[in-house]
Length: 126
Length: 126
DNA sequence: CGGCATCCGCCCAGATACTG
DNA sequence: CAGTATCTGGGCGGATGCCG
Image (cartoon, rainbow over all chains, first blue to last red; front, side):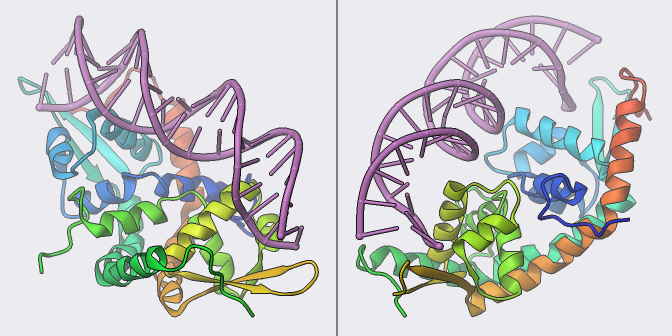
């Protein structure tokens, strides 16, 4: 087998990264890591996530074998989403990223302010 | 200070995650982790990355204090991009994700095939 | 409750041309 | 080489309405 190379356009790892690149995937996976959740609960817990995008995100995750969708025949119907074992391994791989964001966001924000405040024309020279 | 909460729309960590969510950021950071790179080299090494999107991505990374841009007064001009210390910590946090993609993409692809081949109407019930 | 279908506006990304 | 400027179209995502 050829080495997987995300820098090649047709490599499957690119598809995987593209899914992660989805605006909501990381957040949804993060919530499901704590336990199964119902549709509207996820919707409420991720601020700014529309019902359409949530449905779309969940279908994509289900298709990739990362979450399971289970419908209970209650009235009205109840649907629960949960991580698969594979999904749990991805959530674990994402953990350092979440931690980084929480630990370093202050430095990023400071860099942004410094960048925006500097002389617009200037340039790092050498 | 309030706890950073990526699930709140106005939390700065959301901005950080949104940057990672960029289609190209992870790939560019991955390349720069191996050492400084010039503009056109990056462009060539990431298949499918247009010059416009690369410029845009690099400007965003520079603004966030994750990469430095250094211009050499050669003819024609030479520009080199390199990770900052902060950028290196992010690249390190991204490593498990890259490794996951390379290790597990086969399972994801298999799940996709199984999903697409199944009876379109069916549904996981309980 | 948990969706799907439809419509639509807006932004993003590609293509192209030009510049220091 | 390393960009910026401008135009343009397609698609993403929001809003709304309907259904099991």
